[in-house]
Image 1 (spheres, rainbow, N blue to C red):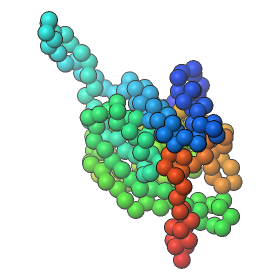
Image 2 (image 1 turned 90 degrees about the vertical axis):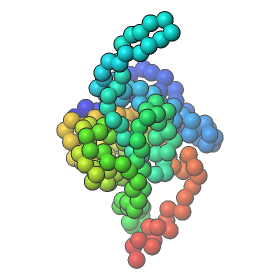
Image 3 (image 1 turned 30 degrees about the horizontal axis):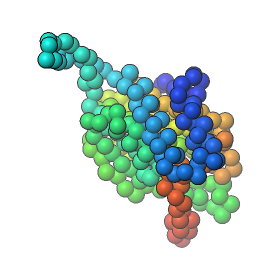
Image 4 (image 1 turned 120 degrees about the horizontal axis):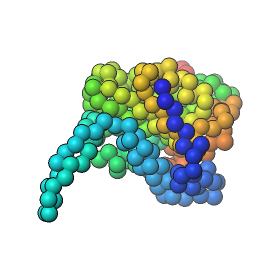
Length: 228
């Protein structure tokens, strides 16, 4: 299984990552979402190099030539809600792909907010059987949400290849996701950070991606009702 960490090389992704992490930039949701989307576009380009291609003859006004084009049938999956701008970046590149959406979110299961459970209650997806499945979710912390999304999407069949794409990952989350993936899968990260704090947030990370993109949520309401 291949794991790519773009933080180990120099690219324009580093600029967008620095702005995502910067507390002053985070005050502007539009800028934050835009950088998430741009990283999605750049990562999609890198993923495109791993697809299978076949030549197609294209006729121009002055002649014709063969151009290698992707032959993979692609399904783009994401985890609501934080994954939406990241997913859009991929969709800007893979604009002919089918799309899948999974509602899988984490919730604290103790009052100290140190233990996390995963709740999944919605999926809208085509069959992934024989297709290339790309799952784009910006944060890979505990790995629970991503593992739940993988399990949900694979209920419709076995894909030819799976690419898991995230912006920031914790080493612990990567190990959890590896257990949920076939051996020929690939994990793509803009950065693999040092780990998680006691509240299961990635450190240094940049905070809660969903909140920074769309505003705070009443997360505690679901946590309280689910414990009863």
